[in-house]
Image (spheres, rainbow, N blue to C red):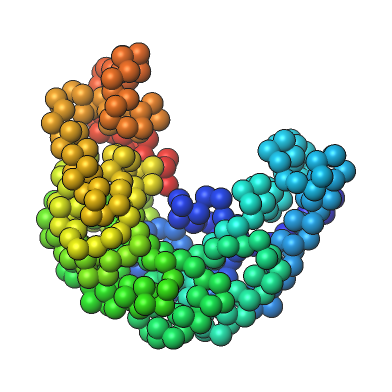
Length: 383
Ligand code: SF4
């Protein structure tokens, strides 16, 4: 069988794990951020609207084929876990597009994420045409979301954003990264704190839900305090629907990695990142955002909640971690990154604790560089 194909880009936010990925542009029009290597060496391209519509048609054909197979297997046209499992075992149907659409339908066929890094940089009317076609083709869709750069949004009027909302765009994910101007310049984000505030406010005024991403650890040793306090100020000025944190991880190919290798940029330790996160949360005032820690790189996944009511609880989790004896903190760091623990309470499971302790002893005696090297290698596989 010749597979029906459509194009998908490399990344999506963690919260879009069950969304259909629809590629509207290729790569990143900016491509200069010091902490990012996703699109390095790749040229930015806006795709033709007709080409994107053809992809939507292909997705519809795949969806129809999946439903027909469901009828043939006696499942009444429903997309069930057993039907999807059967596709994964079938070499004729285990290709990416078929898997993506079947998993999307299994999860209700409700959410779509528009790729790649800055989809809104195309003309608003072109995006509206794509959104309308998508919504007409799949009436089951409830939420369409996308990444966008704050710089791009700051060039769009609230009316344009409202027109996108009316056409079906329901959430924009923006990489704030930091609210501290010298750090924004240092990492070459290409946007100022003021532009971040303006862009965020416009999105909110349009009715589109707003997620702002913050990189924990981005300030390094030199700027961690300013990073935390200024980021809190910018978030307070925006009051986004969601604040999502992700911990910095540097890999070869990222300009900031080279600076780290040269000794110019000094990474924070896990415990220092947690202190920085505390300072950030402490500074969040007068907003109703939901604080989310849904990236696997974050040490304390359970630091989550609705502001302002959960602020004290979030700070208490951090304080509880920082008050642990050093060996327990090391045990948690390794266990969390190895997938043995998720939350601090998991430390009280003596069987798992002993397992991690044995691994920690092995790491310290057999790996040159010990725990830090082992953790660095483990987290490198997370991105
Ligand atoms: S704007 Fe986003 S995708 Fe583009 S270089 Fe910066 S972090 Fe990477």
